Image 1 (cartoon, one colour):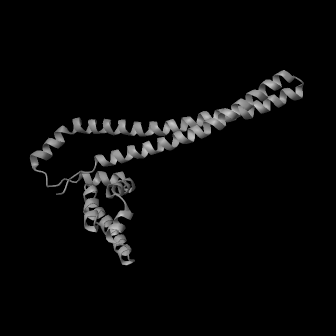
Image 2: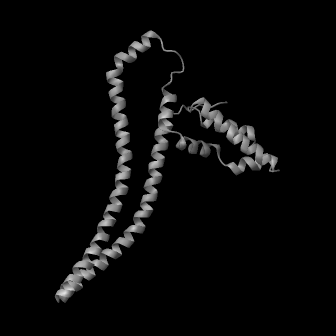
Image 3: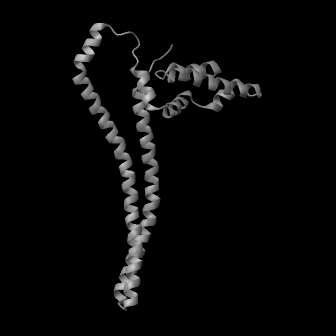
Amino acid sequence: MRKSDFLAALGDALQGLPKRDINQSIEYYSEILDDQMEDGIREEDAVAELGDPKEIAKQILMDTALPKLMRAKGKPARTLRAWEIVLLILGAPVWASLLIAAASVLFSLYITIWAVIVSLYAVNLTFALGAVLGLIQGGIFLFAGNYMAAIFYFGAALACLGITVLLFFGFNKMTGKLVALSNQFVLWIKSLFLKRRNTK
């Protein structure tokens, strides 16, 4: 892929962002490619080293604040006529309540993902506390001379400790996947505000 094709594909993938942001991104990657070519790297190799323009656009989208995307999408492409403004005002009770309901559902889904992550570590912490309390209770029974109860509590503490360690590694893996899911969710929400256009 040549530099011009790469920059065109990047600009196309960023359609819907504010024009100023699109131009800044194109200029930034154009300068990177120019620097690499000045260092003696072939144009195609320099472009290949940067990667897929769609993936770069996804990262730029992730770094763009949602309010900025909403403002850019909220600007009308043309001046509204008087009858369109009247219809918008009259329909506001319907479309505004639907918009608020949709935003609430999306926000709830995002919060749910993070609530699951917090819950996983709360469970792990509970087993860790069980291990500590089991050791303390076992020690109390040991000093009191109740050896059977002490053995029971020490055993329970070791079991809780083993479960804590196993869950910690499992939950870390699950948390990584849930964080990736939350990032994809945010990316999807942001993509709703982008106007996808295919430039021929």
